[in-house]
Image 1: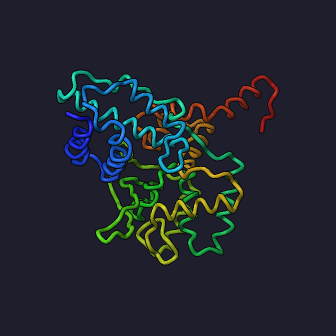
Image 2: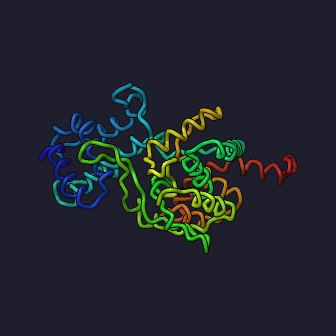
Image 3: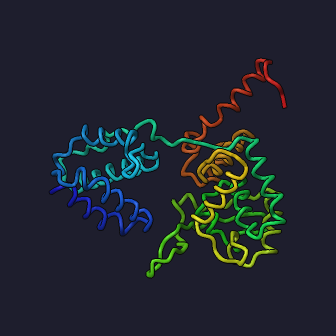
Length: 318
């Protein structure tokens, strides 16, 4: 059996029935654009781990098919996962004599990189949003940025959040769904609501008093069932919200960071304030504190350096 033939079987029989539509679509694109042209014609038992590794590593230098520039870390991790998962399933079903996926190595530069806002940048963002609220009709969109800075929500979780998910009496926020941009039968862009990323992503977050008060003000003015809406009460798609975020950073002269940096910023500030790993892990919706610690240990280096200087007497206690 050729690897391309197996990839089609794996995608339709083992991915589509159990994974979210968005995951299926991502895998489909990787297979169509990446794996089929380069490995689809190979006999599955003749696949060479060295050739696959060379291909994956090469994506760091000129992996973008359109620009020839290095491929993003997320894209490389996705391609890496398709290789490993498809080969593991083929081995478990007896289609290949040995499993070579565990011999593949994810390039170091493709590992998850934690980028967050500095405290000064965060203050500027919050100040700008606060001062603009009286002048802008789409203030609910901008408030979503503040919500993420103090809860660590993913963008899909934020935009799927409804007022019924906020327990104002007990100060709790329930995360039970997420969303992404999709298209309807006519090709129009729509917001697709789905279950959370993982089981652990279902969680209840205690809200700090200041954020609870902000949400109360937003609810009084809201014309929508959704917490984040536009000036007319219409639902907000992911790309639209990302664009508002990008324009805010540009207006402030803050270097561009992906929206996920807001989540990383929350986690980093929480660790700086000595929140324990288990609590932070549950708030973020991670499977375990080990994942949380692995992600954020390096982002705290500046904080650790400050603490070490205080211990040695060379630092300034603010």
